[in-house]
Amino acid sequence: MERIDSLDKTYSKISKLSIVECICLLLSFCFSIITIIWFVGFLLVMYIVVVVLYFFVSLAKELTIQYAEKLRIVNCIEVAYGEDITSSVETINYYNNSSIGKGIELFEINIFESIFFTKRNYDIVFPFKLIMCILLILVYITSLIVSPVNLALIITQTIFGSSVAVVFAKEIYFYIQLRKIYNFFDEIYVSGKYNNRNNKEKMLGLCFEYEKLKSYTTIQTSTKIFKKYNDKWSAEWEEYKQKYIKKK
Figure (cartoon, one colour):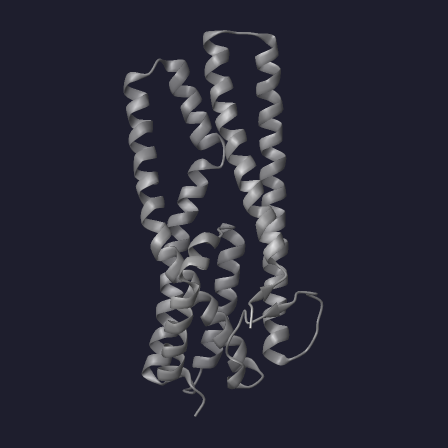
């Protein structure tokens, strides 16, 4: 059966907002440099418009992500307990653990499935983002050494005055915390200690820690990579589940 997730449209909007956000940032940087070399009132106005637009696009993107993540966690609870709450989200084959039964155990396994896919997605994406971060740092240091003071100030403003530096910092933080949460889930399931004292409660806390992490960092995984590897990862998840999580 085809996978259906009504939130895909919302995530598509987020991707488009990210593209517009990036374009606005590049334009603001270009206008900043041009106005230093060739000061024209029209270009200054365009610079102001682009900066203001960047702010509102970034705000719209973050609010949309927060809204989507809120619906996602509510839908996960709905699926786990078989009850409609308030999410109005339709998902078919988004979670693939119906054999577990309703309740907290299904909720935690569904969250772990999400973590399982997110980690594999990010294991591919993160090295490229880390390289970009290192290159950005090298370019920034080089610009401070060789560029005129005015240009160095603009580059500093672009990197640290906008969200560029914050985004890269969040990328690293997200990757570290994601691996930490994944490793805890994996350790409990592989060791067969899920039903031991306090482990269910600890895993429930980590479920919400994972959702909070996504909400705080507002980082989205690559849809293109997900579609490319979905079948492979789904098979790996089924194998993992059969080996370590299958309901006895």
